[in-house]
Length: 114
Length: 112
Image (cartoon, rainbow over all chains, first blue to last red; front, side):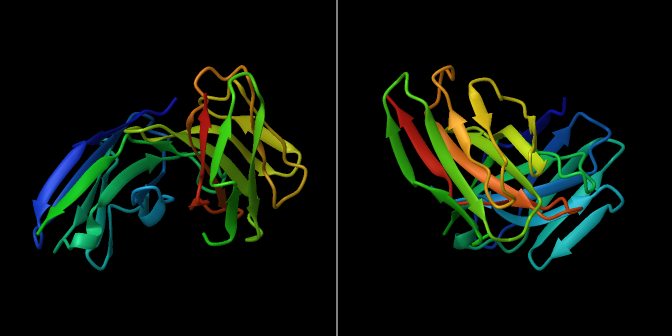
């Protein structure tokens, strides 16, 4: 089955700097890659996603890049703010409309230092 | 995701007892999912259902059971066969022909 590895497990950056979280996946059939943000004790919230027919997607301060050949994708957060502090999860799926489950990475605890 | 509810928020049970976790959605989503989250871990898929009266095992289905008698409901039973049931359980749903999954608020189960 699919295996998703996520790095780093903890990332501390100064407020205003950029943060990058990286994930690799094993199954070349995976074609959907979402990123979730989870605050302590809360539900995961979908923040951005990308499909395999696209190399990059941006939404304000958040962007995701995908390299299908290398089977890795990354989350980029620019101009970080205190409210960006949370745990971020990457995931992969072969769904493409089949609504299969997601395989998650183990998460990155992002800490924004004031 | 406000249309997905899970109850209760906290649940305490004695070892050896079965317990059922509720998940309801009013989003008219076809697919529903159950995930388990342990401290410092990502979410792991337990079961999922794409249509009523049909469901598939995920990566860690042993010790769990589900039913999908109604489109809006997907209850999860944690049986006494589950060796380490204490965890945070999250339910999710997604629309037909779409990949995006939206999560409920979760149920924190503690078994002693």
